[in-house]
Amino acid sequence: MKNIQNYINGQYEDPISNEWLDNYCPASGEVYGKIPNSSKADVENAYIAAKSAFPVWSQTTLEERSRILIKISELLETHLQRFAEAESKDNGKPISLAKAVDIPRAASNFRFFGNAITQFASESHESVGQDAINYTLRQPIGVVGCISPWNLPVYLFTWKIAPAIAAGNCVVAKPSEITPLTAYLLGDICNEAGLPKGVLNIVHGLGTTTGQAIIEHPDIKAVSFTGGTKTGAHIAKVSAPLFKKLSLELGGKNPNIIFADCDYNDMLETTVRSSFSNQGQICLCGSRIFVEASIYDRFKIDFIKKVKQLKVGHPSEPKTDIGALVSKPHLEKVMNYIGIAKKENGTILCGGKPVIVKGYENGYYLEPTVIEVPTDECRINQEEVFGPVVTIMPFNTEDDVLQMANKVKYGLSATIWTNDLKRTMRMSNQIQAGIVWVNTWMMRDLRTPFGGVKASGIGREGGFEALRFFTEAKNVCIKY
Ligand SMILES: NC(=O)c1ccc[n+]([C@@H]2O[C@H](COP(=O)([O-])OP(=O)(O)OC[C@H]3O[C@@H](n4cnc5c(N)ncnc54)[C@H](O)[C@@H]3O)[C@@H](O)[C@H]2O)c1
Ligand SMILES: O=C/C=C/C=C(\O)C(=O)O
Image (cartoon, rainbow, N blue to C red; front, side, top):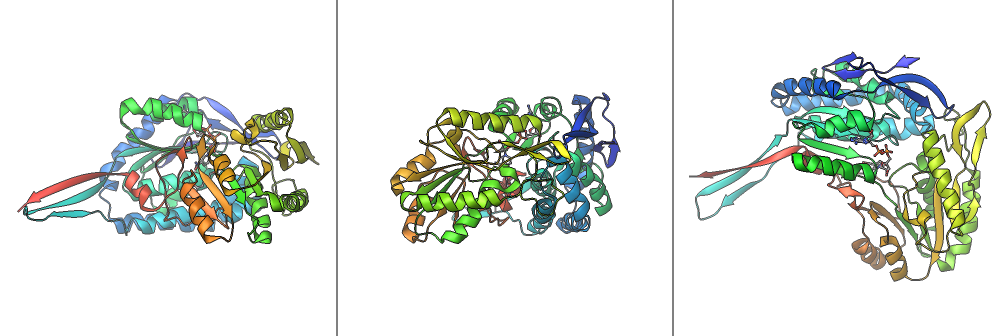
């Protein structure tokens, strides 16, 4: 059994309280290690380390910060296999997926922001006729908090940490207590890359203890959070009177809108991915599929056929398409939603049942599930399930589908399949989402703004947006 430790001031240490939580392997259902349930005192130690590192780090040249970030990126690539195995063990996702997506993306996050910081510039405004010039400084905030979820553990953890430290801040970070392993391994990589001690501090524990201590800390002046909408609302409430800067990346219930004029085969293949990648546990998954009535029956037959071919299995099996869900309570939550859908007269077209994987009978496996819904207003079509479950229903007109797409409380992403340019422009303009994909899904350019509207969050990550979030603008006006 491996105990995970906090990483504070460049060193690994046990929690002061000596309180520990069980860490589960979703593929087998077994406890395979312990993680600290860090208290306020641990967060305070992390804060003190970060605060002490800040004067030097904030004055470290951009070239030097860039060099260290790129070195971290290279080391993640060197340790790809080890990180991929750890991510898979902690989360239940196929090792092949962690190897192809999660770990390479974590490396890209460091490389991207290592480069971006050398290109980040601020504005100047000449007050013509008044003999004055304004220039704007973009200064690091100080100590900032980064809190991330379990679905893309090291991918999302580093998506916050990399811009925060690139911009000259020092960080107190908390990964999800459900998937702490890769964040734990990251400490060693940071030391090896020469990141000065205290620049990044990683504390483990429950949201309600460790996370709460971060958001309540009066001198942690900004918090970047990715997770559930309910948690986001709580963080906003706690942080507002402390005047913290906040970036909140929250839940989604994203429409996948398929018009008859699309490139059918491309759409079909991508729709299988956008429905079930990472066991459907990606906030960007297109969990509501709307299909133009004229191709609905054809789509239904072809889609179900492809979904039935997906292999549910142990994450280390190369042939596995769908691994284990992240935890037992999460599997129960998803199963509960399938029950609700049945009561709401949804028709289970395929899946709907747990899967017993030989040799791993206590793992949290579920069949990929497609539910035909009689109306878009049922709970399964309105609430975030965050598992391998999608709904399908036909639509008649562009107006009808636009209305249904927008009639949810969320607004993270949307996918549209069509070859009609004017329709693409009309729909993209009117759809309520922070990210619209047309004829693709999950194609990411790290320079673009990333985030949601409505209950999907506030603020944008990515590119210079993230560097703006992690800096304070200060205007200097000089009269000459
Ligand atoms: N918009 C995005 O980019 C995005 C990306 C991934 C996941 N998500 C969302 O995340 C959710 C799934 O993740 P989850 O179940 O880990 O979410 P969660 O909100 O339960 O937890 C996220 C993180 O917040 C911490 N936390 C919980 N309570 C806290 C508190 N009181 N104070 C401070 N921190 C606290 C948790 O420990 C964890 O580290 C889904 O809703 C999904 O849509 C959104
Ligand atoms: O589950 C949520 C996925 C978030 C993805 C990103 O933040 C990204 O690709 O930058």
